[in-house]
Image (tube, rainbow, N blue to C red; front, side, top):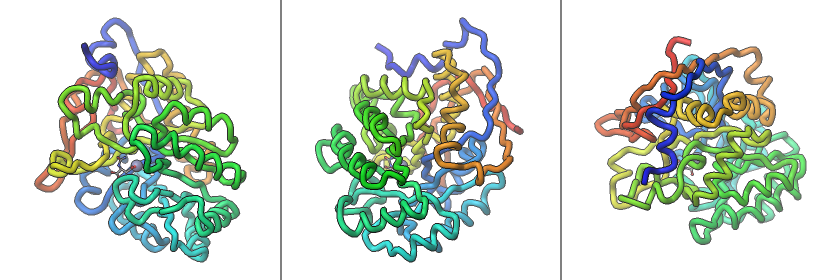
Length: 360
Ligand code: NCD
Ligand code: ZN
């Protein structure tokens, strides 16, 4: 029996004719770019497909100050001409109110909350979200117009962690009605209900959570390349999230959560979570939306929703990065080289139906 996602590859286009697709300013609202050699290896793939990426701060050490965020932004900008890194600040208990004000002055607009220990680089995260200290920070964040992005997982059973965290999302949404809160990499169908309940709750969706289920990760030989946080869940979660993407739900934006790790780490006894999807994200999304005849919604899902919900007009201004995809098969590379190692590419080895045309 072939996996659900196989239908989006190889020859599904043989029986139908598709036109070229043009996307204006695709935006990746959740992206891990790392630093140094790995940044150099992975950045070209995001810069080729996206006008802007929300750059996650879970480095070692994490991006906890404006000065670190500005240095990191400079490091990224030195390596790419046509890509806007939209920086985030790592929320922790000792973040001072002055630091938050300084971040705001320097144009940093997103605060990222990791519960301590939830994922890669969360060792310095928040121990107790609903605590006096964190609520004080969030109150100022609301006044300064920050967006709060949350890796929302409890420390309970791994498949229920996002669901268990929904009460925290809802408490924060009620307590700070003017603070936009993002359910990052939404993975559980039950989160969709919270989105409808609170006007100020939004979400990002990855490619892997709309196409894969736990069966693909663990149902046959174990696939460390498909292991990520939050865990990929059941077929019914996948199906509900896929529908949400295909309909371009107005409160949901694409965020790849492309999170590269070296194969030497991924194939070791303690594989870290993270899926590297930047090289294929737009091309596979095009196949998925084409397969379901929903191409008219792709522009909203990969750009317009985020532009509106994150108020990006002042950042993008009259930017016109047009990305073109043509219905032509290409083989996805298995991996991307990084120093003497490699990073596996999601769906490597399969044939994708839409190819991005270079030289836009
Ligand atoms: C991310 C990483 O590797 O930085 N890993 C992951 O499994 N998604 C961190 C994160 O977003 O959870
Ligand atoms: Zn992430």
